[in-house]
Amino acid sequence: MPLELFNVISPVLFIALGGYLWVKLGYDFPKEFVTRLNMNLGAPCLVFVGLLSLGQDLSSLSTFIFASFIAISLMLIVTTIFVFVTGLPKRGYIISLSSSNCGNMGIPLCLFAFGDIGMSFAIAYFTVGSFFQFTVALFISHGNLKPGSLIRVSLLWGIFAALFFILTERSPPTWLMNTTELLAGVTIPLMLLTLGASLATLKVVKFGKIFSIGLLKMALGMSIGIATASYFGFEGVERNVLIMQMSMPVAVFSYLLASRYNRNPDEVASLIFTTTLISFITVPLMLVYLF
Image (cartoon, rainbow, N blue to C red; front, side, top):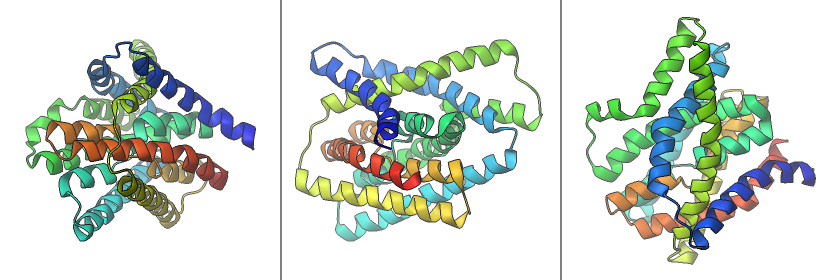
């Protein structure tokens, strides 16, 4: 079991560590460029390929996506109540505590832990999580959301393209599959390198307070993931992926929103850093539980 856990976690840890050390050694890492490349080109291709691989069982795919929507909604509701009750700065803490790093960390972890089918379900969850980030989280942080702005979210185009081929029962042209698969394959390593590079520039403030809140966030995510998977009667890979994705640390994207709209960016950055460190302990424990 220890060797199996190491085989799952080590690729994620080592590649993220590579990005971290790259920045710490003083080398230039164009985070903004790589993030834009991932979100505007890589992620749509990743979603397109992942959803198509699950398209043969449309019932399972739709149920899992709905369950992911419910789980993320519950996390948003619970964290919002927590923030209001405790009197924490509302916008920054809500967007961060309700998020999960289901892309940079969640997808590769599910790939190495549960295989290609696990990665496909992880991408389906990532699709729902990204939709929340580009709509609900953006509205909370900015206070305004224009429906027309959704057209510019390239991730949605990847979803629509996959649904077109799934619902019409057509096979994508070979050139399209080869191109998207190639770009999707590059996206995961870039996500991990960007995660490490981002952590290298984040500073921790109010450590005791942030650490306690981070622990609570991780525990809430795990609990809601387990409860939702149980409610929907998920077994095997579907159950494991939903629980794992809900157990991820705070998403780096929440810092981008907090920084852009000045929603307590230092504390959001600290939450990302501390919950990521906590995940290096909780992820192995979750894998033991899931296996």
